[in-house]
Structures are given as C-alpha cells and as structure tokens.
Length: 447
Ligand code: DOR
Image 1 (cartoon, helix red, strand yellow):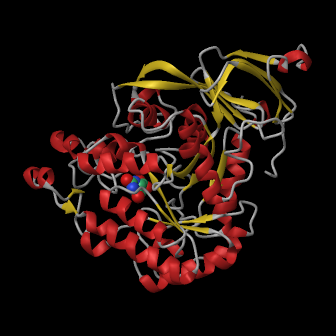
Image 2 (cartoon, helix red, strand yellow):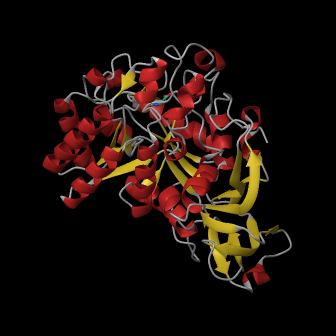
Image 3 (tube, protein in one colour):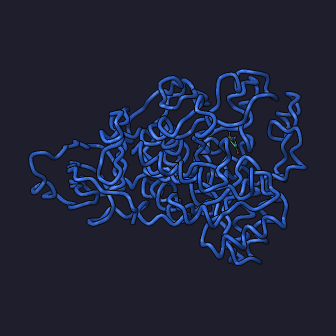
C-alpha cells in the first residue's frame, strides 16, 4: 500500500452503478478506504459525511496514466506539477507517471524526489516520477537507476521518452539492470535514422502536403528489436504510444513467444488520423505521428482484445509560440489528461468494443499492474483503497482549450462535443475534483 497518509473524511456515494453494471447501490468511504457497499452502507456514515447523489453515474477505480509530461522543472510556462495535477484529477486520474524529459532531465534522484514530493504537496494525484534511462536522455550512458529507485520517489519506471534508447547495447544493459532492480523500462520506439527530418506519418497525405515522412517501420523495427532483447535479458519492456497496425501484430507475435512485453495506446491515436494534417495546423503534430485510418482501427481492436494493454495520455503541453508556427518548426505533442475518458468512451464504448468494466481494465487496472502499484486499480470492494472515479456516461461536453486546467491550451479536440464526463475523483477517500473544479487540500496552503 502507499506510504501516504489516509484522510479521515467520510464520503457517501448514493445510487451508483459499480462498473456500470447491475442495480444502483450505495458506497461509504472513510479513512481512505471503501468501508461499506450496499443499500445500508450509509447507516454509520455520521452527520459530517459528504453525500454524493450519483444516480445515473458509474463508479470505477481511479485512472492511472503511465505517460504524462508535466514540464516541471524547466517549462513551467506550459505546465507545472500543480496545474498538471489539477488536469489529472479533473480527468479522473488518481496516479500519473511524469516523464523524465524535463529541464534538468530527471536522470538523478534529486529531480525524481523533487517531483514526487511536489506532487504530494499539491495533493491532487500521486505524481510518480519516471527516471531517465540514460544520462541527459542522450542514449550513451546509463543513468543511476538504482539510486532513483531507492529514493523517496521510489522510481519504478524508466524512460527516455521523447527519445528512443536506440543503441541496442545500451538498451540491452538497461533491460538487464531493470530486471535485477525490479523496475520497468518504457521505450519510445523510434529508429532515429529513419525519422531524420520527419514531421508527419509517411503516406499519401504527407506526400501530397509536402511534409517529410515518419515511416511505420521506424516504430516497428524497435518494437521487434526490443522484444528480442527483453526475451534474452529475461526482462520486461513496455512500449510507449503504439501507433501502427504492425506494432499490434508484433505485440501479438511477441506475446505468443512468451515475451514480457506490454504496450500503451494514446487517446489521440484511437481517434485521429493523418487526414487532420490537411490544415497544416501544428496542434495535430505529435510523435509518433497520427497514422492512417487502418492503423486507428487496428489499435482499437488490439486494445479491445488486450494485445495493447492500456491507454496512456502522452499529455504533452506546449506553449503557443511552439505550436502556432510553421509545421516543421512546431513541437510535437497534445494535451490529453482531461479528455482521455471522453475519447475512450467515443472510440471504444460507443463502438461496442469495450464495456465500462473494460474501461476500468485499460485505464486503471492494467496500468497499475504493469508498473506495480498496489494501491491503484484495485477492485471495488470493502477494505480496498478509495482511489475512485465517478463518471456520467450520458453527459456531453464541448472542449475549449482555455477552460482546461493546463497552463498550455494545445488540445486537438477544440470545439468538439464529446461523450461522458468525470464528475468526481477521489484519492484515498478525499474528493480531489468535483463538477469541473479541482479541490486542493487545505493543508497545502493554497486551498
Ligand atoms: O508528441 C510527443 N511529445 N511525443 C513525445 O514522445 C514527447 C512529447 C513531448 O515531450 O512533448
């Protein structure tokens, strides 16, 4: 279980559907855990309990994001641990993993411990630091993984995300060390020699628009290579932001060989394709790039079948000047935390590919398992940690970048009306977001 303190708050959730199934019931939370479930759950709730009428709503375990860029330290003009935590809570997340490509890079225990501590001070979501695999993300020398893993931030996932650990010997050593440390290596699969100058998916659209192409093989060749390296090292490897149909096929093959390989897909790769590039609006520039409709279909099917394990946002805030410029010069990445549930609802639930129990699996249970968090992604049962999210499946809302909690506004879903909305997020029994407002705990002095 988590080292963090539980709160003494009591919350009574009334008339809620657990996993969207069965009959509505009541759920009592206290001391950070689920205390009772059933029609009489509220009988001991006491006069101070906060009561939520959740008629028509669904209760799921809180979401876990294995791939978030919070930009602190270094680019606080685009996101901070504070603003990113608010975005996470509003998106239904109770734990996020903050990627290491900050400035300075999170390749030392000083930075990784700072990220964890700052997240705990803010108190809206557990911000787990991701440590860099290599010093400065340069791909040349392994970072001090053991020191970061044994720090206060207890780093359990390492990634050079934004860059590929492209040298096969360095990757092999990283996998060997990770296996002895019991930590996870998450690979940004991009063979850099194949993507020199690339800004868009290599295909007919990029060719017509005159944009330099990023071939599928740049991703797939690294996925295949790393599956083999993980096999030989007896290690686990996790593939960040899978984006091609070929990656789904390779995952299927590797699993069939008994290789310990897992993969995530982003909401944007589940919804958008490279036809979005027609406008040359760099809000659609992302790495890996938006692919073709056939890739989108394969990713959805792979996620439904469990070949792709989970959804991870790759929430990547960028300043206006880094996006509102010519396509080639713009930075890749898009906001994702507050819209992830709605995109999954649109692409996976409304299409019949997943039910709400399936959403719990891909947004909470599997990511928690992959990274070994034992207080997240737990069953909705008495005695379990109260890390929870309430969802209104019938809500519709229209995305407006400036209304999002992030400092940056680079959402590709601007003005889109999307289904399903997080109404309440609960971290260790305390409400962290409710009706579109993050609820900062009083103890951090900014409530
Ligand atoms: O689009 C992306 N943006 N992909 C990455 O791998 C990195 C990220 C960022 O840091 O902006």
